[in-house]
Image (cartoon, rainbow, N blue to C red; front, side):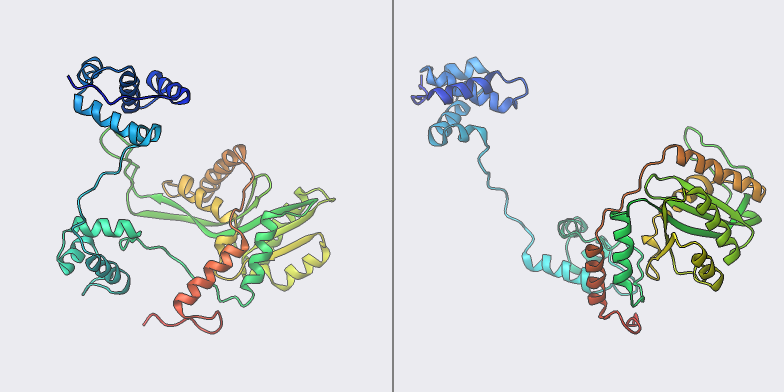
Length: 367
């Protein structure tokens, strides 16, 4: 009977091996290897160790040799195994990546795995693996629009600085309007969700009037103030601003983040600002409404309370919005802006560079 190679253990090695051999959360393969080495150190034969631990003598010999060669590290880590050689050449991978990034298939706007596979002469699964490896997703798209604002970077720094470092003794409101919010009534009853089908809604509807929704998000506590008006002019905007002004204690300054609508910049508004010196307007860059944090709340309102609703009248629509706002304010928390102004500017500069645009004049045409 073949005897395991003689092993001599240091006190530290023996302690570690015994710990592994008894560990309840230790991987079972490591428990087995530790027990093999401990028994081999006692001078037991390979066959005897294999029968005792319900394994094969070849396995016993393997881990004893690994321990002799690499000690504890030899059994704690699996040895690298030579995998099969890749069948796909680098040239083929490069062709797939290059065509995905720089070409379009004939008669189509983007590549699919099947079309690319036919073009290159490989399996669609191979194309999928290459795309996944290089993070390419031709089937996806996202919307974007670069701002033409010549003061883009200045406004980004101003608004992001306000979000991330609010001034002391001040309230910050992110204000926006959702004009012409429609009270849409479905032409038929909504089919309730069942066990084997989702909720069903008729695709057509009746319009039962509109209302202009004003919303102001206090980014310091997440509370939202709403207002409803028949139209969207400087008069209605100032009426809503008066509501906000009355809600804020007189000893606090008011900073308001707005988009660039003419309603926010008219002569009536300028006169109102001169009469209320504690109110300060901060405008996001043009075509950059995503910087107005209340847009997130308005999007959630649309998704959770309006899109799937059916409203017989404007008052019913307003009631639904108010109910959502009440629930939202009951769960409110501060809204935190996490991206720095420097990161935003860096990404915009990168996109401009890709489009060959220096930020002045008109953007290059798609052709």
